[in-house]
Amino acid sequence: MGQAVVIPAKPKPKVAAPQPLPKFDTLKVALQDTPRKDTVRSNTYLVKKGGEANLIQVPTLDTAATIIEEMPPQGPVKLDSITSPDIFHIDNGENEQMPEMHLNLEPPIPRLQRYNASSMLNWGQWEAKYFQQIYSQTHYFDAQGKAQPQNARSTYYSGIASVTLGCKRWFNFGVEAWLRSVRIDATDASPFKVLSFQSGPNSRTALSAVGPKFRFQPFSKFNGFSVQTALLIPVGKEMEADSRNRPYLATENLQWWTQFYYSLSIKSHWLLFAQLDAFASLNTGGKEQTQASSFALPASVYISYFPTRHITFYAYNQLWPTVSTIWYQAGLGAKVRFTEGLELECSYGRFLAGIDAAGPANAFNLGLRFVKW
Image (tube, rainbow, N blue to C red):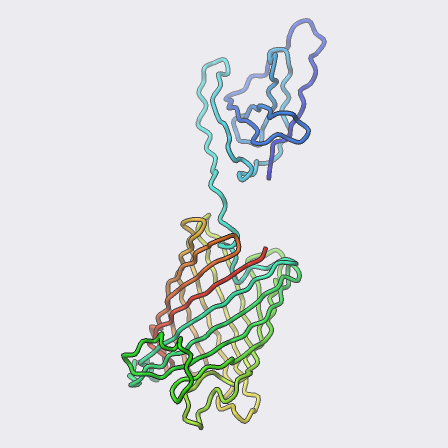
């Protein structure tokens, strides 16, 4: 919290006649917001035209007989230290009216709203998050990019539980666990039936993968840029199950996911976030693995707006290309901050285009995040 530094007035000079005061162009008086520890009460200051950086002490008694000395430049006073300033005009002897002094006393955006995937945690700080998605489709995109009916509704549930620990300012460590569920139903069935987590010929649920993740900041001068890499190890059995006439649940390939994050504040209420992924699905030769190895370079862009200290709105676009397929989705979302470290997030995404890929489809997302600062 920035405060003005108090400079004691010089003693009266030993001269017969009082020294005249230096003449200022325009003056404004401001009261110090809180007294220093070595003062009994707040002192009054004159502010020269040009800002808070030029503060001088005003003696409380005989100003005509006291020399007023200008302080050395101290830099601008931090606005968050001015909680309740008292500003008023004074007469400088020529009845001049100085222009109004405007201070932006709007509190800063809470750090939970500014905290995103590119942010780093310090030692002793940690984050816990549970993200849920319901993906549902009744059509798919063929090799020409046209939507074709599949005569059934395929709905997938993904629940990702993660914990991230702050080890150093430039290095964080965490773990992830993925819960997957699938349900094949009639085309007019509700996609939210997957939340019953039933097990049968057309539905199944399993813990699909777990693994460590690391986040680090390679350049200390670029706080908005960071890199995260995660290794997801399959732990479920018969998740692909193509040969057993059971619905596909998840891949049994080893997944290596590296993500490059970049965030940029735009003015005071906007944030731009960009993400580039390098995703590798590796067939390690397991007897249950039926999918070949693949590689993808997904890219995402988010724009967030903070209308209040408790609410965030955002829009996003994502493109997911592979060697033989591609799909694109767009969506809208919102976040509500309940306390300094607790936040609820919900969003909706629509898969709008693709070639030999899933969709057109709907994605419903819900997340709960807690950060211990």
